[in-house]
Structure formats: C-alpha cells, structure tokens
Image 1 (cartoon, rainbow, N blue to C red):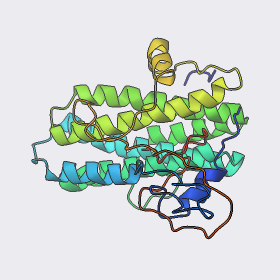
Image 2: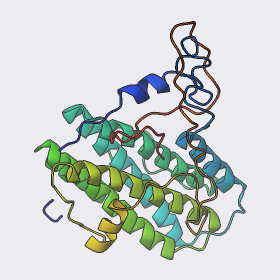
Image 3: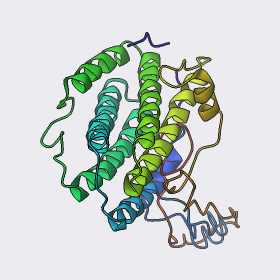
Length: 285
C-alpha cells in the first residue's frame, strides 16, 4: 500500500430537521400565517434509496445470462469490497464522529445490497454472509481492512485520506470489471456503483481541499481524480453505459410570508439529509 498523502464542518442541522419529516416538497403549507409563504416550493427532490430500489428492480427484470468465471469472481470481489468500505467508514465514524463517514457508510450498504441482488439472481454464495463488521472471507480484504483502519486512526486528515483512497480503489476496480463483462444487468449495477463512488470521492476530496490538502491519487491517475473531484455531483440512476435515465426534480421557489398565524401542514415529497457531511442537503446514492 502506498503512503497516504480537515475538515469543513458540515452544515447538516437543517437537513436533519427536514429529514425527520416525511417531506419537503409543498413546504410548510401557509407557514406562520403566511410566513414562509409557499415554503420550499413544489420541487419533489431526489431520494437515493428510491433510486437504488429502482436499479435493483430493473436489474431483476433483465434477462439472466450465463456468467463467465471472471464475472462470478468480480461479483464476489465487489460484494466484499463494498463491505470493506462500509465497515471502515463505520469504524472511522466511531473514532472521529465525523458525519461524512456515517452518511457514506449508509450508501455503501445500498451498494452491498445491489451486488447481493445479482448474487441471488445467479445463485452465487454470498462471501460475507454471517460475517460481522471488520470480518472478511478473503485474506486480502482482511489485511486491507486492518491497514486502512490503522491509517485512519492516526488523525482526522488521515481518515479522510483513507476514505478518498477507498473510493479511488473502487472506481479503478469497477472500471476494470466493466471491461470484463457484457451482461447488461451487471453493467447497470457496476455503473451505478461507480457513479456513487465518484460522488463519495468528491465529498472526501472537498473536505480535504477545504483545509488546503489535495488528495493524491493511489489507483486512478491524478488527472482522473482531479477531474472527478472538480466536477459536479451526479444524481439519479444510470444505464449500462453510464447515461442518466432518471434524475432529481429539484427545489421549488422559497416563499417568505407575513407576520403570525398557524403553521401549515407538510407537503408531499422526498426526504432530504446531508448524507456526505459536505453541507449539501441531499439523499446521496
């Protein structure tokens, strides 16, 4: 493992309050006697859990194709690699209490679930069944977990570097696995996982950059990493070629009303939370 080369405080309080409700679409009704006006408008927003479910549903509906040994090995590897990411982030959250680790660990669980859908579809044995946090089937993943958690325990900056490195590795591995498969259902899952990993890399990269630290690529080229970190976050589900097939509906206009009055009811829509600890209210995939 190469030597790893803090953090902006996440503005999540408002997001958490919003997430406790069942919506933020139509807003706070008439607000406080018209106060807040139309609230947060009519934007129905974006929910990554829904996107993940739709991806899994789409994958289940695609035809079953014969798997090569390389495709089987790739699925088993990614099941463990997504668990590696989840378990390392949970460990680092317990240590540093930085919400970026807790939030992205939830996304990694959804990535694990997406791979599990394929394992079940093709009757493959789950390599991490009944294994607890920090436990892995392969010696390689076990060693990598020990190395990454030890490095991340040194400082918060080192922990963020570990997070970026994991996403760097995930993207590299997914790129290689995409080259080794022609099964549409596997391609769809890998493309959506890779999109999620790019967003995670953006989150870790932005937190490091806010303190004047630039992440140094470990697996991708530095140009590839910089291009990802400096580009816009990606939303919605993508197809087997990485093209977006669904996306966010956004926020409506925010109104500010008058004086006092009763508080209106909540509208319908999607839940929002700052899943990456980067101050952006969203429900990241």
